[in-house]
Image (tube, rainbow over all chains, first blue to last red):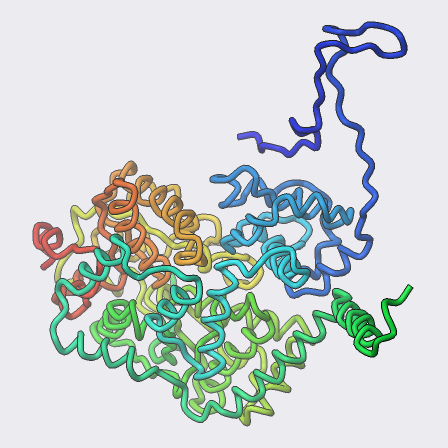
Length: 264
Length: 311
């Protein structure tokens, strides 16, 4: 099946006029449709480096645009707008505005790794999708995706106790994303789950949700992990130039607070 | 017929978080299968989460550390050579950590630093071999060994074997696969097919063996997952399967959950049963459905198994 490809000539860039005179010549009905000329003035020249500084994006520069990733993509098969090859192209060119058009679907990568399997250049497109999702959030272009909230809820429990308990992860995730547990399919699923279970088993499951399973003597590992997470967060903000922005904002705020007025 | 591997007769068992929760039936059936086949499992002491997809998304090197701690415990505290993980996620992550530690000095440095701070031995690449439950049965017992121990048969059971994503992709973390006759294939895996065929099952030609069920976003992007799962269930039914055999708790619960969701939310019911391969093999060895936890599955297959003379 041919891959649906993206065109930069979008309907909103096509202008058709019924009556049109160009340089004194009436071209109505003949040459009446024009593509709006476009000049890209807002390249982010650092974009490839920014993506490469985030985990998973390290090898984005290797891409030679063969399209194997998009061709093998699970999500592309159900949504043709999900196009890893195109996004990698835009990252390498630094066309930030263009990539932001797809900001609400990039997080939907299911990490099936078919792209990584197919890629002849070891770009690890799956990693690039994760790096790009992180980049969107760090730069403030999108709010946290449900997937990111899930990763955080899950990881918090692992860091805290060494292990997770699925019921607790699910409850916290639903709460944090504002979803109700009272959904027909969920209730039906729980009913089917409990259908044949003996009482002793139910008690055991109930206890697991009260007393969270944990790895013993975990506190040292937890401290080491937390320190590392903190250090990495700082490193990433710096790589994206976000620390500089925060500094600049502070400096802007200080003279104003001291009554010296805005800087020129 | 290759010789069975002696070192698989006694292995360190890493069940992982899911097998202590929603996939209890996979845990139960794996242990019962080991017992019935005379293979010994020694649970990894005080194990922790492998990091799963979620910690990898936050920071891949942290996932490498978490997985390495499990392998370090098996190697240094238990003196074991082989770690067996029935969960595709755990199996994948241990393999990935093994690969990264052998090939990426930066990962090795982070793991060493964190291990020292946490106060345990640093795992060194090559100390243990990580295998999946499929390798364990296929290479620790083999088809011939299995046939000798059969007390019942899966004859007449039409099965689609579903392996999912993390058992075969990406290829580079599984250096033992794609090594010619006898080895597992990453494009057309067959270990589960081989074992179930040895137990009498009729494997259907199933094109979606390694398709994705959307497990990573089973709750965070449920509509996508339901679409992907429904596609797998329908393809299995179209291929003539009565049962989808699974070998991963995330795939298994994803198929079960979205089978219900497709039915309740979109009015798209499917009939195919979803059963762990360890449960099917256990039944063929004469174990009772309760012993292999059939009653713990959401997908209700008790009546169906009775009809087939397996319960």
